[in-house]
Structure formats: structure tokens, C-alpha cells
Amino acid sequence: MMGTLAVELAKRGIQSHEDVYRAEVAGDIENVDGVLKITRLKVDYHLMVNPGKEDAAKEAMKEYLIHCPSAQTVMGCIEIQDELHLTTKD
Image 1 (tube, rainbow, N blue to C red):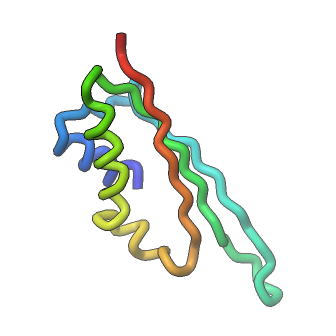
Image 2 (image 1 turned 60 degrees about the vertical axis):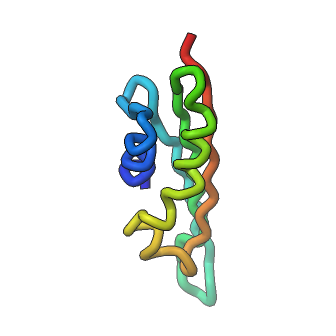
């Protein structure tokens, strides 16, 4: 998922090097009818952008899941919660 978001950012002229882009991921495992299942993924993306690129980054965030093979594989089985935390370079 992180890679697909990086592609969407690149399309909009936003770099995603490791010093400006990272993700924190957590998951919930629940007992569903006697079977332990991953039921939820929470992904917090942290991105530092150049001034004026904030809207483009938000647009990339809206688009990436529909292009992401991993997300498309598990959607409907695992709830995906994602959030973009933006900061602007000085």
C-alpha cells in the first residue's frame, strides 16, 4: 500500500524518500466464530511536502487504494483505516 501511495505521489511531483515519508501500521486480530482473523488495519502515513503540494498529496491519498493490488485483495475482508499526516518543509 505504501508503494502504491508513493507512485500516486510521484505522479503529482511529490517525492517519497525515506527521510520525508513513512508509515506506522497496526492491526486488530479478533476471534470470529472461533477463528482468529485480522479484521482491521490502521495505517498512518507521515509525509513532508514542499509548500504548495499539500492539496496534491491529499488527492493522491484519495486515489491510491483503488490502484493498490494489496488493498484491493483484502478489501471486504479486512477493514482499512488510513490517515495522512502532512507537514510542510520550511
